[in-house]
Length: 399
Image (tube, rainbow, N blue to C red; front, top):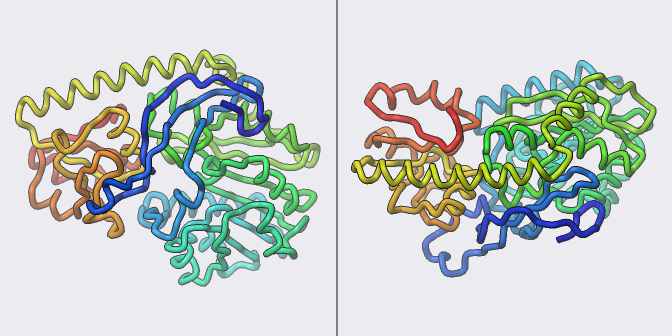
């Protein structure tokens, strides 16, 4: 296994086994041709980077049928509104040019409409890009990479803000991405991105954060080390509640902005918690194996007591849980979801049927496995009747 940044050999420390596409919700007729890959993870101590060894090709993961839309969650819409407010208050000047990498359905970018900011999104998923364009948000239906910068010549060395949210960890060729950012940013421009945080994943033992699309799990230490290789630096950092624990990173060219005390404080905390070395990864492996055993035991006991168990929200995260823990239809009757592109299909790998929310509300299960635990506040508030009628929520992480 080679580090995807340094191209130096590193040792894998954990193998989750055969894994399907996390968002590869499938029709029954396609079961026999389902794609799987070996999901193995490793850690580069040189740059403190947690990464997948193998992964599907980007166009396998982010295709025209990609069933994820940022605007489907009111919680995420509010978060993106606040994210845009932060950018406006700190980095927007006259005639600002702003690019979003992985702009999805335009939920973030629409907050900059009716301003003098020139906005542009890169989104390879046709279904998401179509939604963005329906909001009159200019979107390039391609992957963000150096080759595709030829499509936006006027933005070169002239872009004030490049931003992203849960997208940079999806990019296998991170070196190409950084070179592309360097080619676009103005002298005092900033690269702002939010990503699931390695420290939060380790603390919560939320191994479901690991799946095909999450090629990297970042920390402040890894971001600082990576961008230092390209004459850029981490200048500020903020905790974010999204995705079960994320970080917002602000990167600029070296020496162009003052480095916040937040950066050094966070890196010192990471060192105390061994996020800069492989020992934390080995503990995480042990924690995952124990969590898996406990989860399977709890579910088996519930079934022995004739409890009806349903899954709530057909998330990409659920694919890792179900396949790593080998949980199928014998345990979970169905998974309910609101996304029409998923309803009527089956979960990747374990082939649990995906049904509409009507099934959940009309036939209340005894137990609801909350796969979208990172949206628990929004969901538990919406589904109060489930508890009032005797239902109980369940998860492998603490609710």
